[in-house]
Length: 151
Length: 173
Image 1 (spheres, chains in turn blue, green):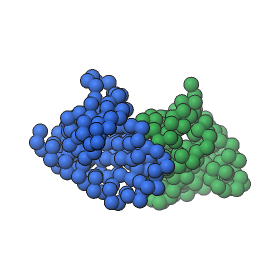
Image 2 (spheres, rainbow over the protein chains, first blue to last red):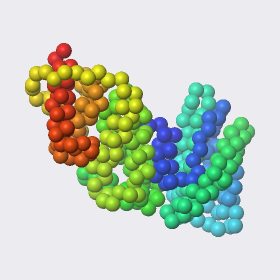
Image 3 (cartoon, rainbow over the protein chains, first blue to last red):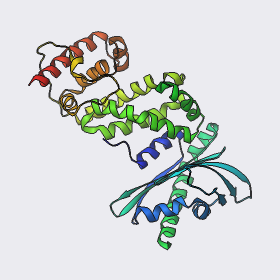
Image 4 (cartoon, rainbow over the protein chains, first blue to last red):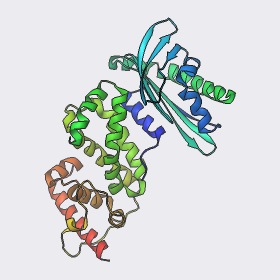
């Protein structure tokens, strides 16, 4: 049998990260259009995530890259990025984020997860899970869909 | 390098919350987990694999000895696969019969089961299937199996004996 698909794999990583944010949604847009938005980290991430002002990714096709994020306060932080079709993991010293997509008929299943790095923050993360997690995820999906339609 | 030697540094990094190490670890153990689940829960392999992997990664931070990773993954996977297989429960027990060595019919550890052997295993009850897989494919001794399955050693022996008979009966049918 085939192994777990990318959405199932992200669920497993979210469990391992004890991520307070994990959500998935089916979008009525083809995989290529959806993933074109997600994979364009430099162009799109600042639109998709409210606290990212800039995201700089070195050019090239390598699967693992060292990127740099600038947040809304102007603070810079290095990010490790693993990006391939339907799969994106990004982590800094403080934050981890994962995105996965699978074609589903004419649409696309998209999943997102996010966690804070220091394990000590786990209980705090879980406390805010409902409040922040669901709202962030909804806003993320809405924006991916809107920007994919613009392409 | 042995698989657990590759796994140990990934486990340590994953325990610190390194998502890329988790991704690598997931890739490393998925074929092993899938092989075990395909033998124990053939009708629900995908469910068994997913539940096993979720349980493994949820429990990863509690794993004290990363070098023991594979034994621990095996224990978690067997537990989850048996649970999933029992949930559907379409099983047909068979009676003990003739005696020959089962090992001759099964490939060496680490290789894929042939479709025929897999099909035969699928027709055995979960309990029989599980002890056969652990003994003949994983090469575990009876005491280790008893600990893993949380049943007395005598029960392992009798299950194993019945399982071998069932398997042979099905094989020669």
